Length: 127
Image (cartoon, rainbow, N blue to C red; front, side, top):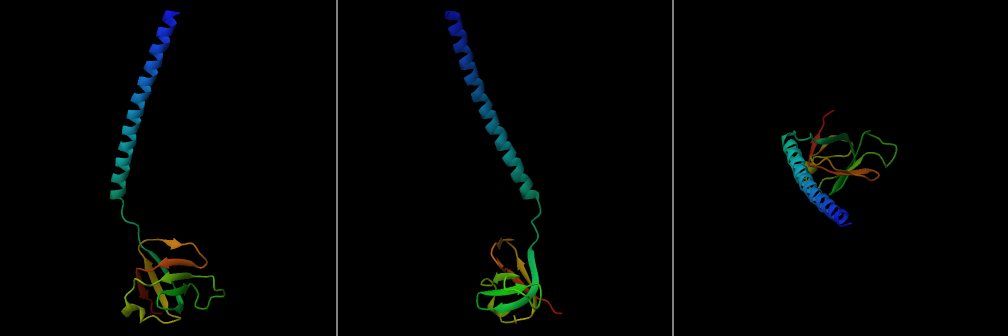
């Protein structure tokens, strides 16, 4: 019985020791994977800008409503564009019915109906 107890305790400590060693190796390998992934992310080219091309339906001091069609059938189509970051000089050139290209560097379109985005630049498209 003494030998069974000794064997059990020895196995118990051996298992605990091996488990501790495996966790350290796992943590080190996870750190290595994270470092490799961050290196890959730095090497990847930046994603291109998101742009919306359409016709201005409404304009106010903080936003414009842009739709794909010049005369949309519903009020839920298109995109509401936050223009607070655009220079006043450029905003004053915008008119209802004008075709524009809205450029968004952050690629964030907020889900709503209609969708919302923040403009980083607006280009007027001559037809």
